[in-house]
Image (tube, rainbow, N blue to C red):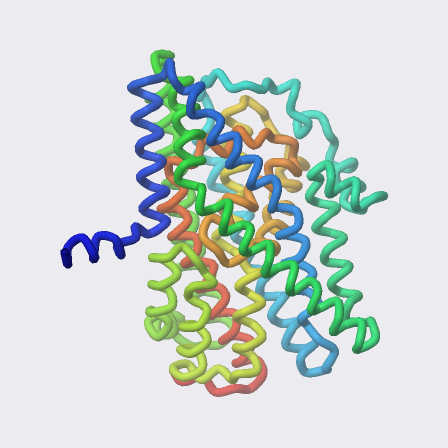
Length: 414
């Protein structure tokens, strides 16, 4: 009886459910390719769910994050330094990802019978200048309806910024409204993610089943291995070289001593693949162990949870170029700059929840006209990569808070 009671209480963690769903999808696609029509609906439904939540989630997260800066002079100064750190480190992560994926070219020479051809993909036809002009929407509601993310992101940042200039009553009202919308969208996103094991089973089984018997599976998995190694290697370089190097230059302190202090929060981020799950631990440890003030920690870390996603930006940049390579598209330098810009802005709108990178990847693909079908290519290695890049996201948040605290004259305890 005790065994049955404990069995009923046992609940498999979401990341294990996702891994099982992906592995079962691979097996089903290999062993029963003739029956993938019966599982495809689950993948289609999951991808539609991602499309459903992505725009309101990004919009509310950006408005809430930008409008939380406040008006006080000292807070404005702290906010400026914090955002400068987020911008520089995320941009460096994007550039690193772009260099790695263009050097190793993991998606080249992968011949797959995908549903859409190069001529059907808008990213191959729209010029760089047109993309820049299109960032400013002539009708933001039309952009939302069409899933055109760059103008939506631009408008959200602008809207959040000017909330700060509104009268106090309006500021409070709009802040409460968008905070409420954000919380509701987080709940809806979690609902979609709860169905990720089934949805990913459908997507992966369909993707693998289409390649079974064509000779493309070996090439696909070989390319995925290189792709995964590039992302993991990029995250390691960024987390152990770029961020510590900047920390050493700006504070003259040992970054790895600080990393050891923040080990519990980093381990929590890694095992849960959720920066939000590690936030309470990070807030406590950075104040009690590192000596960062409550004012700076309380501002920088929650904001970074929403707008500072170095690992996610690197992942999105590499993945978008990888998918373009698989489709046989030679993106121009201007189009790759659009990928960097969109990866950076999409990372700003990432929520600190598991699989947020998957949601934001849809933003990047749509911005450069690549089909969401391409997401199915990378799902098999999604979970371990999510754990690695989430750790980098949290590490950048905490490092940025410590650097800002040091620049404000606070004495760090190491």
